Image 1 (cartoon, each protein chain N blue to C red):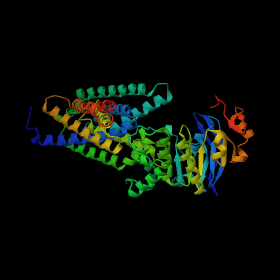
Image 2 (tube, rainbow over the protein chains, first blue to last red):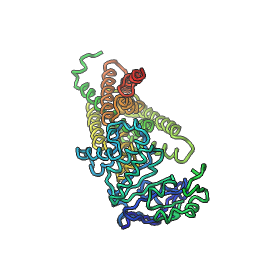
Image 3 (cartoon, rainbow over the protein chains, first blue to last red):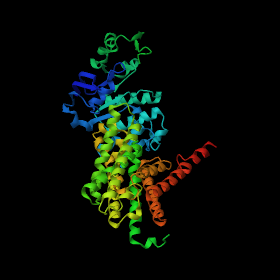
Length: 250
Length: 287
């Protein structure tokens, strides 16, 4: 079954095209890495799918329904740098934000929700940090709080915006474990990813993007030298078999 | 000095009004501060003056609902101007706010002077709109302050969780389908509401200080938003009451500056001795 289908999505930013005619269909239960050079519109793509940015044209369908009707089953892990970590709140509070839709208007989180929030924190190895002020967490721990919040949403499709950026080994492991768990539960995951070295290990599907999709499909079919050269415009060097982005291309 | 003050019915009203007004301002201010809109709220407060004066010139009556409409219109125009200046020119936000504050406030003063020179005489109290004068309040004014403050506090409490997420992580909030733009607008509306009901007691020049100083002080005592809003409310209430009392007891002291001075004393005390980030705590920890 198709979990997510993006049709002819076009997005402009300051009158410059940021994404042009993006179309692809993601099968349910797949782990997709969205890769491409800087400025290729990877984060823009996720944000336009989630309707956080205005789109010029195109449509997004989730399990054959328009996106708007399916917000409940969508989970989102934004880039860590996009929020103010000095905000007066603790880790558990942030995780519970993932439950606001379930809690409903005017109400506060009940015991059951709080227990669920704690379970989610424990799943990413953060059980001891529930009451910790978020400004006192390390970058990796903050990322894991965001993961726990996404987990708390109990969604069917997850979008993650560069979750691996600047995290420690423990967090990287937690993210990988979480993606595996989600896949085994039949959930669909899309991840904006930077590190070409790890693409083949993490993802079974790849969307190669440079303003328009170069190709979408199974990793071994899409993640090829000729495709990468098309996406990165020849700015790519290979050592052994693992692709490396040369310095300056970042 | 008049020590029989507390037995006067009017003073009891003023006491109660300033308490609730300070509380409401502290609570709303907590969100304004975290949204980094302190300066914008100051601009909105200053921009309320011409709106209020225009309403008085057109309708020739002192009516809080009319003033509210006028203040809302001019405050929103000011906010819109600031945003479009930043968007369409190379002028940065601080400079844009600087220009708009002075233009609107200047216009307000011109209108106020016009009213004082040409009005038929029922403009009593309008001149207190700049620095505030608790003594000029009559019973119906204070009733409006009281009801208005209660409404502001109730609205903020009802949407506490929604305000929290739309300020902390607006992207995520939009992602889960929360109308973030509505809450941004609602917060601005609450600020305008606080300015208009506080205008006679505190005045447009200093009302922003009553919005911002109490939550700033509260931040030195707690790291939880709920507690911060509550503490800011209490600090605001203490400032409101002490300012109102002092300005009523000592002849001719304006209320707004007294309230803000009281709030500043609380702020400096918190800065030094606050249990979370106070300077004394930091020094002790380093020992």
